[in-house]
Length: 226
Image 1 (cartoon, rainbow, N blue to C red):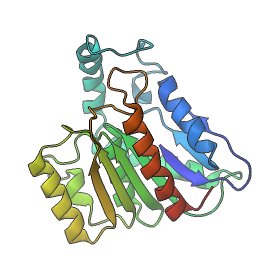
Image 2 (image 1 turned 45 degrees about the vertical axis):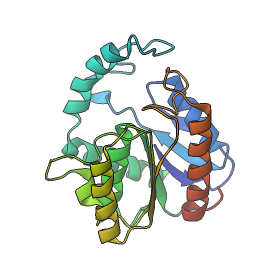
Image 3 (image 1 turned 180 degrees about the vertical axis):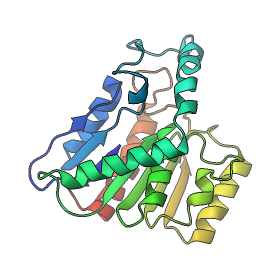
Image 4 (image 1 turned 30 degrees about the vertical axis):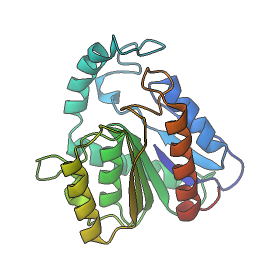
């Protein structure tokens, strides 16, 4: 997701694959932000690329992930950056969108995309938020944690209990400290991966409330109150 202040009014532009994310966008828009939810898999056909059940239970989650992984693997860094350029151009061209910086928010694999966007556009992205993130610390030369010296954004990462190993969290902390980035990394108690998604068995009301309690003040500090 990318957010920017509205020049007036409130609302959302949403092209996500899941009603869950569309509802998230509407809620953010209710706070006065213009919200763009990109369809990450548009290269593979019109949304939805494949139908998702209304509720993703643990018994079908492996099959859903299995179908998603080829699409995720095809979403290369080059594609991520080209798409981010297009999203930012779109936002800056909209007459109803207020002037000023943007925020990039990612859930699961969206978190590293948000970090990459902020690193590529430090003059435009003022806030990065990632919740139950994946693939932030990898062995790749362009792993997101190796890019954190570039963003000027304030960062919040809300982790489920087993999202990252202690060693990976330490490595990410060291990278952010070395870069002088203003950030918080927090493990949300009693949560599992996907805790903000109410259409899954992973959903945690308390974890989701904590997510809003961290996200909305971050946006207010960096973008204004909407």
